[in-house]
Image (cartoon, rainbow, N blue to C red; front, side):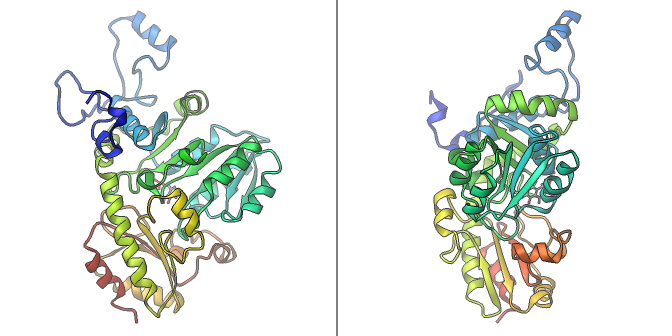
Length: 392
Ligand SMILES: Cc1ncc(COP(=O)(O)O)c(C=O)c1O
């Protein structure tokens, strides 16, 4: 097959970014090294005169990390990608490389709690002006972006209430205000949503979640145009050191080979569990972007290929009912993490979102009875039995 770019994404992902060594191994080689050597002093001088021409130090670039970066960029449909040591390193670096005192950031208010701390507490300490917007409200975006801005940060679907932001509409408003649009695409995963196709400029991931998908590594990634990565992101990244370890990158390259298969299956199971939960009288609310009763179902159909691997629901009995359900689980694990082959259930109000004030949680719809379920690869009927056994 001469032109691989015309093949399906699932075909390409098995070999994209592969850079075989002189040994012609089948699987990806693992270069577990920090430094590189030179045949002469002149070669070292040339390497520093022309950064990017060859590997000089693994904080800047490493062959195993580069394989993962090329493979994820191909999968996402992005020109360039840089991997980071965690999702938060990706979010922070993608923002910090663009702002300084006097810059303006506009962000959806339903952000993962650490992202809220970065945007709402850390950036303002450095003189960055920040405006939070209710993500589903286009009029609020229009108002906020009537004033020029430098960066817009969007999380869609949001953690944990699975609220969507209209990528195309907000990107258009952001561009008119002079802002770069950064999308945290963790919940949709690159298998189900590619924000760059809907007008965004930069995509960030916690690769700790579905990209690894097997609970093994902490990692992140930043994707965008070659110009953004080389001219805006790299000058910050090279000197601040949020680099990914080659060993983690090697695992992640292998994980990408099965990402689409895993997420498709997890989405099918999540849709089924959402329907089963909605039929239970003890369940007062189910939030699932693939369901007919999601308030933004038309937008979900437009920008996502399926509802995704997460379901959030609320029990009418509040926190005692949520804790009773969580404590009765025998198959699904209780965990604040998500995006694993093992299904994980979490009580956001007392864990991931405990740092918000009660008023902030109420505003985002995170209540005592709210449970977030990250659906894994177990058999759907086994999961339904474990989840529903204490209800009704
Ligand atoms: C939406 C979202 N963004 C970013 C992160 C941060 O990722 P990491 O834990 O890999 O730093 C998380 C982690 O849960 C998340 O859910």
